[in-house]
Length: 158
Length: 293
Image 1: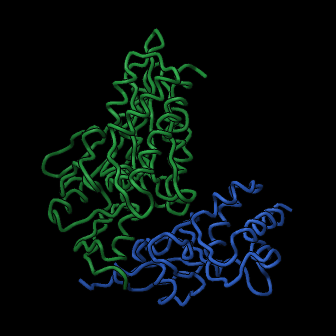
Image 2: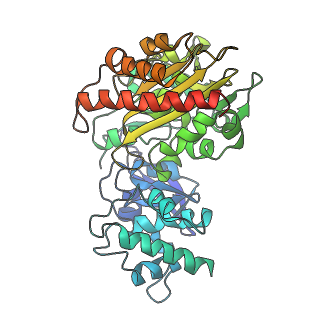
Protein backbone atom coordinates (compact mmCIF):
# COMPACT_ATOMS: atom_id res chain seq x y z
CA UNK A 1 0.00 0.00 0.00
CA UNK A 2 2.81 2.42 0.82
CA UNK A 3 4.08 2.65 -2.73
CA UNK A 4 5.68 5.96 -3.64
CA UNK A 5 4.96 7.65 -6.93
CA UNK A 6 7.39 9.89 -8.78
CA UNK A 7 5.96 13.38 -9.30
CA UNK A 8 7.25 16.50 -10.95
CA UNK A 9 5.70 19.72 -9.68
CA UNK A 10 6.53 23.31 -10.55
CA UNK A 11 6.34 25.46 -7.44
CA UNK A 12 6.93 29.20 -7.76
CA UNK A 13 8.63 28.60 -11.10
CA UNK A 14 11.03 25.90 -9.84
CA UNK A 15 10.57 22.29 -10.87
CA UNK A 16 10.78 19.71 -8.08
CA UNK A 17 11.04 15.95 -8.70
CA UNK A 18 10.09 13.86 -5.69
CA UNK A 19 8.69 10.46 -4.78
CA UNK A 20 5.54 10.66 -2.67
CA UNK A 21 3.00 8.40 -1.05
CA UNK A 22 -0.41 9.08 -2.61
CA UNK A 23 -1.89 10.00 0.78
CA UNK A 24 0.56 12.87 1.28
CA UNK A 25 -1.42 16.12 1.30
CA UNK A 26 -0.22 18.93 -0.94
CA UNK A 27 0.08 21.18 2.14
CA UNK A 28 2.41 18.69 3.86
CA UNK A 29 4.38 18.19 0.64
CA UNK A 30 5.02 21.93 0.40
CA UNK A 31 6.04 22.25 4.04
CA UNK A 32 7.86 19.00 4.80
CA UNK A 33 9.25 17.85 1.45
CA UNK A 34 10.05 21.24 -0.07
CA UNK A 35 10.59 23.25 3.14
CA UNK A 36 8.20 25.98 1.97
CA UNK A 37 6.72 26.68 5.38
CA UNK A 38 4.98 29.91 4.37
CA UNK A 39 1.89 27.84 3.62
CA UNK A 40 0.28 27.32 7.01
CA UNK A 41 -1.96 24.48 8.08
CA UNK A 42 -4.81 25.25 10.43
CA UNK A 43 -7.85 23.01 10.46
CA UNK A 44 -6.75 20.52 7.77
CA UNK A 45 -10.32 19.97 6.66
CA UNK A 46 -11.03 22.87 4.37
CA UNK A 47 -12.65 25.37 6.74
CA UNK A 48 -9.97 27.85 7.84
CA UNK A 49 -8.28 28.78 4.55
CA UNK A 50 -4.78 29.14 6.07
CA UNK A 51 -3.31 26.65 3.56
CA UNK A 52 -4.68 28.40 0.45
CA UNK A 53 -2.28 28.29 -2.53
CA UNK A 54 -2.72 28.82 -6.25
CA UNK A 55 -3.04 25.65 -8.32
CA UNK A 56 -2.61 26.47 -12.00
CA UNK A 57 -3.49 30.04 -11.04
CA UNK A 58 -6.69 29.20 -9.14
CA UNK A 59 -7.01 29.44 -5.34
CA UNK A 60 -7.32 26.02 -3.68
CA UNK A 61 -7.08 24.51 -0.21
CA UNK A 62 -3.77 22.65 -0.27
CA UNK A 63 -4.97 20.44 2.62
CA UNK A 64 -7.76 19.09 0.39
CA UNK A 65 -5.50 17.88 -2.41
CA UNK A 66 -2.96 15.12 -2.60
CA UNK A 67 0.56 15.99 -3.74
CA UNK A 68 0.33 13.25 -6.35
CA UNK A 69 -2.48 15.23 -8.00
CA UNK A 70 -0.08 18.12 -8.58
CA UNK A 71 2.13 15.99 -10.84
CA UNK A 72 2.85 18.04 -13.97
CA UNK A 73 1.00 21.08 -12.58
CA UNK A 74 1.95 24.53 -11.28
CA UNK A 75 1.63 25.64 -7.68
CA UNK A 76 2.19 29.17 -6.39
CA UNK A 77 2.72 29.77 -2.68
CA UNK A 78 3.11 32.88 -0.54
CA UNK A 79 6.90 32.63 -0.99
CA UNK A 80 6.38 33.86 -4.58
CA UNK A 81 4.75 37.13 -3.56
CA UNK A 82 7.47 39.37 -2.18
CA UNK A 83 10.63 39.55 -0.06
CA UNK A 84 11.13 41.52 3.19
CA UNK A 85 12.91 44.19 1.15
CA UNK A 86 10.48 44.17 -1.74
CA UNK A 87 6.98 43.45 -0.50
CA UNK A 88 4.06 42.66 -2.77
CA UNK A 89 1.47 45.51 -2.75
CA UNK A 90 -0.98 43.27 -0.86
CA UNK A 91 1.70 42.60 1.79
CA UNK A 92 2.51 46.31 2.00
CA UNK A 93 -1.17 47.10 2.47
CA UNK A 94 -1.54 44.54 5.29
CA UNK A 95 1.51 46.02 7.00
CA UNK A 96 0.28 49.59 6.72
CA UNK A 97 -3.38 48.91 7.60
CA UNK A 98 -2.58 46.44 10.43
CA UNK A 99 -4.26 43.57 8.57
CA UNK A 100 -2.13 41.01 10.42
CA UNK A 101 -1.73 40.40 14.14
CA UNK A 102 -0.42 36.93 14.98
CA UNK A 103 0.05 36.28 11.25
CA UNK A 104 -0.99 32.67 11.22
CA UNK A 105 -3.89 33.13 8.79
CA UNK A 106 -2.13 35.81 6.73
CA UNK A 107 -0.54 33.69 3.95
CA UNK A 108 -3.95 32.18 3.23
CA UNK A 109 -5.50 35.62 3.01
CA UNK A 110 -2.78 36.73 0.58
CA UNK A 111 -3.25 33.75 -1.70
CA UNK A 112 -7.03 34.23 -1.66
CA UNK A 113 -6.66 37.93 -2.44
CA UNK A 114 -4.19 37.69 -5.33
CA UNK A 115 -6.68 36.11 -7.77
CA UNK A 116 -9.61 38.02 -6.23
CA UNK A 117 -8.05 41.42 -6.85
CA UNK A 118 -7.00 40.38 -10.37
CA UNK A 119 -10.62 39.55 -11.14
CA UNK A 120 -12.08 42.45 -9.10
CA UNK A 121 -9.60 45.34 -9.17
CA UNK A 122 -12.04 47.75 -7.49
CA UNK A 123 -14.18 45.70 -5.08
CA UNK A 124 -16.89 47.01 -2.77
CA UNK A 125 -16.71 46.27 0.95
CA UNK A 126 -19.48 43.70 0.54
CA UNK A 127 -17.50 41.94 -2.23
CA UNK A 128 -14.36 41.98 -0.06
CA UNK A 129 -16.22 40.39 2.85
CA UNK A 130 -17.64 37.74 0.51
CA UNK A 131 -14.19 37.05 -0.91
CA UNK A 132 -12.55 36.49 2.47
CA UNK A 133 -15.46 34.57 4.01
CA UNK A 134 -13.51 31.34 3.55
CA UNK A 135 -10.51 32.55 5.56
CA UNK A 136 -10.70 32.54 9.34
CA UNK A 137 -8.84 35.13 11.43
CA UNK A 138 -9.18 34.96 15.21
CA UNK A 139 -7.21 38.15 16.02
CA UNK A 140 -8.26 41.09 13.94
CA UNK A 141 -12.04 40.96 13.87
CA UNK A 142 -11.59 41.38 10.10
CA UNK A 143 -12.09 45.15 10.03
CA UNK A 144 -8.37 45.88 9.53
CA UNK A 145 -8.19 43.13 6.93
CA UNK A 146 -11.03 44.72 4.99
CA UNK A 147 -9.21 48.07 5.25
CA UNK A 148 -6.02 46.39 4.03
CA UNK A 149 -7.78 44.91 1.02
CA UNK A 150 -9.17 48.33 0.07
CA UNK A 151 -5.67 49.77 0.39
CA UNK A 152 -4.19 46.90 -1.64
CA UNK A 153 -6.73 47.47 -4.41
CA UNK A 154 -5.74 51.15 -4.49
CA UNK A 155 -2.02 50.28 -4.59
CA UNK A 156 -2.49 47.69 -7.34
CA UNK A 157 -4.67 50.08 -9.35
CA UNK A 158 -2.24 52.98 -9.23
CA UNK B 1 0.01 11.52 7.57
CA UNK B 2 -3.61 12.46 8.02
CA UNK B 3 -5.43 9.98 5.75
CA UNK B 4 -5.05 6.21 5.95
CA UNK B 5 -3.05 4.57 3.18
CA UNK B 6 -4.83 3.70 -0.05
CA UNK B 7 -4.06 2.39 -3.50
CA UNK B 8 -4.11 5.28 -5.95
CA UNK B 9 -5.46 4.89 -9.47
CA UNK B 10 -5.63 7.78 -11.92
CA UNK B 11 -7.39 6.70 -15.12
CA UNK B 12 -7.32 9.09 -18.07
CA UNK B 13 -10.46 7.82 -19.83
CA UNK B 14 -14.02 7.12 -18.70
CA UNK B 15 -13.75 3.51 -19.92
CA UNK B 16 -10.67 2.95 -17.79
CA UNK B 17 -12.34 4.52 -14.75
CA UNK B 18 -15.41 2.29 -15.16
CA UNK B 19 -13.14 -0.75 -15.48
CA UNK B 20 -11.34 0.14 -12.24
CA UNK B 21 -14.66 0.65 -10.43
CA UNK B 22 -15.96 -2.69 -11.75
CA UNK B 23 -12.82 -4.42 -10.47
CA UNK B 24 -12.76 -2.88 -7.01
CA UNK B 25 -16.48 -2.37 -6.21
CA UNK B 26 -17.20 -1.24 -2.64
CA UNK B 27 -13.48 -1.01 -1.81
CA UNK B 28 -13.06 1.89 -4.22
CA UNK B 29 -14.07 5.50 -3.79
CA UNK B 30 -14.18 8.03 -6.62
CA UNK B 31 -12.10 11.17 -6.09
CA UNK B 32 -13.66 14.09 -7.97
CA UNK B 33 -12.91 17.58 -6.60
CA UNK B 34 -12.22 16.08 -3.19
CA UNK B 35 -13.73 18.98 -1.24
CA UNK B 36 -15.94 16.66 0.82
CA UNK B 37 -14.09 13.35 0.50
CA UNK B 38 -10.62 14.59 1.49
CA UNK B 39 -11.83 16.22 4.74
CA UNK B 40 -13.52 12.91 5.60
CA UNK B 41 -10.26 11.08 4.80
CA UNK B 42 -8.24 13.57 6.86
CA UNK B 43 -10.48 12.77 9.83
CA UNK B 44 -10.28 9.07 8.86
CA UNK B 45 -14.05 8.98 8.78
CA UNK B 46 -13.51 7.61 5.28
CA UNK B 47 -10.73 5.07 4.73
CA UNK B 48 -11.18 3.78 1.19
CA UNK B 49 -8.63 1.12 0.28
CA UNK B 50 -8.66 2.22 -3.38
CA UNK B 51 -9.02 5.77 -4.64
CA UNK B 52 -10.02 6.26 -8.29
CA UNK B 53 -8.97 9.81 -9.13
CA UNK B 54 -11.01 10.99 -12.15
CA UNK B 55 -9.40 14.45 -12.36
CA UNK B 56 -7.34 13.43 -15.38
CA UNK B 57 -10.37 12.51 -17.51
CA UNK B 58 -10.59 15.65 -19.63
CA UNK B 59 -13.68 14.40 -21.52
CA UNK B 60 -15.86 14.71 -18.43
CA UNK B 61 -15.45 18.51 -18.12
CA UNK B 62 -17.76 20.46 -20.44
CA UNK B 63 -20.77 22.76 -20.52
CA UNK B 64 -22.92 22.49 -23.64
CA UNK B 65 -26.30 23.91 -24.60
CA UNK B 66 -28.77 21.01 -24.91
CA UNK B 67 -31.18 20.69 -27.86
CA UNK B 68 -34.20 20.94 -25.57
CA UNK B 69 -33.12 24.42 -24.47
CA UNK B 70 -31.46 23.22 -21.28
CA UNK B 71 -27.80 22.60 -20.51
CA UNK B 72 -25.61 19.50 -20.37
CA UNK B 73 -22.80 19.66 -17.83
CA UNK B 74 -20.04 17.07 -17.62
CA UNK B 75 -19.60 15.61 -14.15
CA UNK B 76 -16.01 16.86 -13.74
CA UNK B 77 -16.84 20.47 -14.62
CA UNK B 78 -15.51 22.66 -11.81
CA UNK B 79 -18.08 24.65 -9.86
CA UNK B 80 -16.06 27.84 -10.51
CA UNK B 81 -16.50 27.26 -14.24
CA UNK B 82 -20.27 26.74 -13.97
CA UNK B 83 -20.47 29.91 -11.87
CA UNK B 84 -18.90 31.96 -14.68
CA UNK B 85 -20.52 30.26 -17.67
CA UNK B 86 -22.72 32.50 -19.86
CA UNK B 87 -24.89 29.61 -21.15
CA UNK B 88 -25.67 28.57 -17.59
CA UNK B 89 -26.36 32.20 -16.63
CA UNK B 90 -28.89 32.71 -19.46
CA UNK B 91 -30.56 29.29 -19.54
CA UNK B 92 -30.34 28.20 -15.91
CA UNK B 93 -30.59 31.37 -13.81
CA UNK B 94 -31.35 29.37 -10.65
CA UNK B 95 -28.12 27.40 -10.99
CA UNK B 96 -26.23 30.61 -11.73
CA UNK B 97 -27.57 32.17 -8.54
CA UNK B 98 -26.98 29.03 -6.45
CA UNK B 99 -23.31 28.56 -7.44
CA UNK B 100 -21.73 31.36 -5.36
CA UNK B 101 -23.61 30.05 -2.31
CA UNK B 102 -21.61 26.80 -2.45
CA UNK B 103 -18.77 27.08 0.08
CA UNK B 104 -15.92 29.45 -0.89
CA UNK B 105 -14.06 30.41 -4.07
CA UNK B 106 -11.08 28.18 -3.18
CA UNK B 107 -13.48 25.25 -2.73
CA UNK B 108 -15.32 25.94 -5.98
CA UNK B 109 -11.99 25.99 -7.88
CA UNK B 110 -11.71 22.26 -7.21
CA UNK B 111 -15.25 21.18 -6.39
CA UNK B 112 -17.18 19.65 -9.27
CA UNK B 113 -20.81 19.42 -10.33
CA UNK B 114 -20.73 15.63 -10.32
CA UNK B 115 -18.98 15.50 -6.97
CA UNK B 116 -21.55 17.52 -5.08
CA UNK B 117 -24.42 15.55 -6.67
CA UNK B 118 -22.86 12.13 -6.02
CA UNK B 119 -21.87 13.05 -2.45
CA UNK B 120 -25.56 13.89 -1.77
CA UNK B 121 -25.01 16.05 1.28
CA UNK B 122 -28.55 17.02 2.36
CA UNK B 123 -27.42 20.64 2.77
CA UNK B 124 -25.86 20.89 -0.70
CA UNK B 125 -27.32 23.65 -2.87
CA UNK B 126 -27.25 21.67 -6.12
CA UNK B 127 -28.93 18.68 -4.52
CA UNK B 128 -32.01 20.83 -3.84
CA UNK B 129 -31.81 22.80 -7.09
CA UNK B 130 -31.47 19.69 -9.26
CA UNK B 131 -34.70 18.22 -7.86
CA UNK B 132 -36.61 21.51 -8.27
CA UNK B 133 -35.34 21.84 -11.86
CA UNK B 134 -36.07 18.17 -12.68
CA UNK B 135 -32.47 17.51 -13.71
CA UNK B 136 -31.50 14.05 -14.97
CA UNK B 137 -28.21 12.30 -14.40
CA UNK B 138 -26.38 10.09 -16.92
CA UNK B 139 -24.63 7.22 -15.18
CA UNK B 140 -22.21 4.71 -16.66
CA UNK B 141 -20.95 1.28 -15.70
CA UNK B 142 -18.65 -1.12 -17.51
CA UNK B 143 -20.97 -4.10 -17.38
CA UNK B 144 -24.41 -2.53 -17.85
CA UNK B 145 -23.73 0.48 -20.07
CA UNK B 146 -25.41 3.82 -19.45
CA UNK B 147 -28.68 4.80 -17.79
CA UNK B 148 -30.47 8.03 -16.93
CA UNK B 149 -31.85 8.67 -13.45
CA UNK B 150 -34.11 11.64 -12.62
CA UNK B 151 -32.99 13.76 -9.67
CA UNK B 152 -36.23 12.92 -7.80
CA UNK B 153 -35.19 9.23 -7.77
CA UNK B 154 -31.44 9.70 -7.45
CA UNK B 155 -31.22 10.94 -3.86
CA UNK B 156 -32.35 8.03 -1.70
CA UNK B 157 -31.10 8.99 1.78
CA UNK B 158 -28.37 10.56 3.87
CA UNK B 159 -25.26 10.71 1.65
CA UNK B 160 -26.88 7.91 -0.33
CA UNK B 161 -27.78 7.85 -4.01
CA UNK B 162 -28.97 5.46 -6.69
CA UNK B 163 -25.34 4.97 -7.79
CA UNK B 164 -24.08 1.38 -7.58
CA UNK B 165 -20.45 0.84 -6.51
CA UNK B 166 -19.35 0.12 -10.08
CA UNK B 167 -21.13 3.19 -11.49
CA UNK B 168 -19.86 6.67 -12.26
CA UNK B 169 -21.92 9.84 -12.64
CA UNK B 170 -21.03 11.16 -16.11
CA UNK B 171 -23.34 14.07 -16.90
CA UNK B 172 -25.99 16.35 -15.45
CA UNK B 173 -28.73 17.43 -17.83
CA UNK B 174 -30.86 20.31 -16.67
CA UNK B 175 -33.94 20.92 -18.84
CA UNK B 176 -35.13 24.45 -19.65
CA UNK B 177 -37.56 26.20 -17.34
CA UNK B 178 -41.24 25.48 -18.11
CA UNK B 179 -43.28 28.09 -20.03
CA UNK B 180 -44.73 30.92 -17.89
CA UNK B 181 -42.55 30.09 -14.96
CA UNK B 182 -40.34 31.86 -12.44
CA UNK B 183 -37.84 30.69 -9.87
CA UNK B 184 -36.28 31.54 -6.54
CA UNK B 185 -33.34 30.15 -4.60
CA UNK B 186 -32.92 31.25 -0.98
CA UNK B 187 -31.05 30.01 2.06
CA UNK B 188 -30.16 31.01 5.60
CA UNK B 189 -26.66 30.23 6.89
CA UNK B 190 -24.76 31.35 9.98
CA UNK B 191 -21.86 32.77 7.96
CA UNK B 192 -21.49 33.78 4.32
CA UNK B 193 -21.28 30.52 2.35
CA UNK B 194 -21.46 28.22 5.34
CA UNK B 195 -23.71 25.16 5.22
CA UNK B 196 -27.33 26.27 4.94
CA UNK B 197 -29.50 25.85 8.04
CA UNK B 198 -32.43 25.73 5.62
CA UNK B 199 -32.53 26.37 1.88
CA UNK B 200 -35.27 26.36 -0.72
CA UNK B 201 -35.43 26.07 -4.49
CA UNK B 202 -38.74 27.08 -6.06
CA UNK B 203 -40.04 26.82 -9.61
CA UNK B 204 -43.41 28.56 -9.95
CA UNK B 205 -45.43 27.77 -13.06
CA UNK B 206 -48.68 29.40 -14.25
CA UNK B 207 -51.42 28.24 -16.62
CA UNK B 208 -52.97 30.51 -19.27
CA UNK B 209 -55.38 31.97 -16.67
CA UNK B 210 -52.61 32.87 -14.24
CA UNK B 211 -53.27 29.97 -11.85
CA UNK B 212 -50.49 27.93 -10.34
CA UNK B 213 -49.95 24.76 -12.35
CA UNK B 214 -47.16 22.36 -11.48
CA UNK B 215 -45.33 24.67 -9.08
CA UNK B 216 -42.44 22.92 -7.29
CA UNK B 217 -40.94 23.74 -3.93
CA UNK B 218 -37.90 21.80 -2.71
CA UNK B 219 -36.25 22.33 0.67
CA UNK B 220 -32.73 21.25 1.59
CA UNK B 221 -30.86 20.91 4.89
CA UNK B 222 -34.11 19.86 6.59
CA UNK B 223 -33.82 16.07 6.36
CA UNK B 224 -31.78 13.17 5.10
CA UNK B 225 -32.10 14.40 1.52
CA UNK B 226 -33.86 17.06 -0.52
CA UNK B 227 -37.52 17.37 0.56
CA UNK B 228 -40.11 18.19 -2.07
CA UNK B 229 -43.09 19.98 -0.54
CA UNK B 230 -45.94 18.03 -2.16
CA UNK B 231 -48.61 19.17 0.33
CA UNK B 232 -47.67 22.81 -0.28
CA UNK B 233 -47.80 22.25 -4.04
CA UNK B 234 -51.30 20.76 -3.65
CA UNK B 235 -52.45 23.92 -1.84
CA UNK B 236 -51.19 26.02 -4.76
CA UNK B 237 -52.45 23.85 -7.63
CA UNK B 238 -55.15 25.62 -9.65
CA UNK B 239 -55.10 28.70 -7.41
CA UNK B 240 -54.26 32.27 -8.33
CA UNK B 241 -51.14 32.88 -6.20
CA UNK B 242 -52.40 35.64 -3.94
CA UNK B 243 -50.36 36.50 -0.83
CA UNK B 244 -52.90 34.53 1.25
CA UNK B 245 -52.55 31.40 -0.90
CA UNK B 246 -48.76 31.68 -0.82
CA UNK B 247 -48.78 32.05 2.95
CA UNK B 248 -51.07 29.04 3.36
CA UNK B 249 -48.81 26.95 1.09
CA UNK B 250 -45.67 27.91 3.02
CA UNK B 251 -47.36 27.17 6.37
CA UNK B 252 -48.42 23.79 4.99
CA UNK B 253 -44.84 23.09 3.91
CA UNK B 254 -43.60 23.79 7.44
CA UNK B 255 -46.35 21.81 9.16
CA UNK B 256 -46.82 18.86 6.81
CA UNK B 257 -43.96 18.46 4.35
CA UNK B 258 -40.84 18.68 6.49
CA UNK B 259 -39.72 16.93 9.64
CA UNK B 260 -36.44 18.66 10.50
CA UNK B 261 -34.06 17.49 13.22
CA UNK B 262 -32.22 19.53 15.83
CA UNK B 263 -28.45 19.69 15.65
CA UNK B 264 -25.62 21.88 16.92
CA UNK B 265 -26.49 24.61 14.40
CA UNK B 266 -30.26 24.95 14.76
CA UNK B 267 -33.21 23.46 16.59
CA UNK B 268 -35.94 21.58 14.75
CA UNK B 269 -38.42 24.32 15.70
CA UNK B 270 -36.20 27.05 14.23
CA UNK B 271 -35.73 25.06 11.03
CA UNK B 272 -39.51 24.60 10.73
CA UNK B 273 -39.92 28.35 11.21
CA UNK B 274 -37.32 29.00 8.49
CA UNK B 275 -39.14 26.63 6.13
CA UNK B 276 -42.29 28.74 6.50
CA UNK B 277 -40.52 32.09 6.15
CA UNK B 278 -38.22 31.11 3.28
CA UNK B 279 -40.99 29.14 1.57
CA UNK B 280 -43.23 32.20 1.58
CA UNK B 281 -40.48 34.51 0.30
CA UNK B 282 -39.38 32.05 -2.38
CA UNK B 283 -42.91 31.49 -3.69
CA UNK B 284 -43.63 35.24 -3.77
CA UNK B 285 -40.41 35.90 -5.71
CA UNK B 286 -40.90 32.95 -8.08
CA UNK B 287 -44.54 33.84 -8.90
CA UNK B 288 -43.57 37.48 -9.45
CA UNK B 289 -40.94 36.33 -11.97
CA UNK B 290 -43.48 33.97 -13.59
CA UNK B 291 -45.86 36.90 -14.01
CA UNK B 292 -43.07 38.79 -15.78
CA UNK B 293 -42.38 41.11 -12.83
